[in-house]
Length: 232
Image (cartoon, rainbow, N blue to C red; front, side):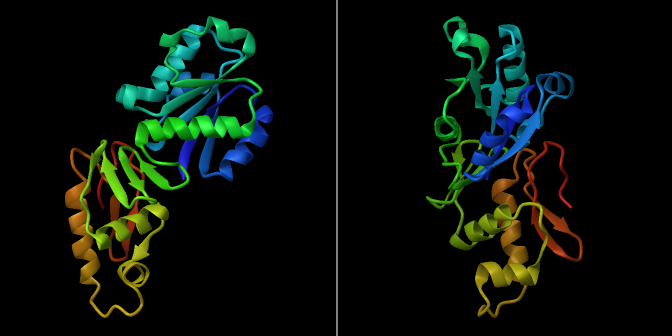
């Protein structure tokens, strides 16, 4: 599931679209342009932003795009603008949006544009992939990329990562991971889990990336990167 930030001053108008996108594989957070300007956004937890430009000036749109993309620049979250038809002719290509749709577009068109942008940015379908910061897990192709570079994993390493990432934030004991990833008929010890976790970390957690947290005396959980998370 991919995280989408909807930026608008009229939340009620987007209720049906939010419901549609949620059912199609998006987790949606809601904010206003004023909140973005005041507080910024956590870009490492964000895959895309949908911006309602109906009440925004060109300079305000540009500032929003800069905040949303943050230090990642052009590799940052995708930005799709929803633009009133009267403003289309005055759009500035340098405003920072990656794509736009005309206000009033069908929910299916907005979804398609978002999926295209995420494919272009991450090369993964939002329905068949998981993004966690710069980590992309393509569930359809059994591929993992970090900062756009492929990560070579064994099958069990991939399955362990996939399982944890699919249940991000939930803590699993070593025995539970053995049961879920290796199967109930596996007779190896729980140390197998520790070994695979250590190998995953050596391949994924470079240059400050942290994805797997150790819960002392319990087990492990997958965490969405925040840029300042520490391994337990």
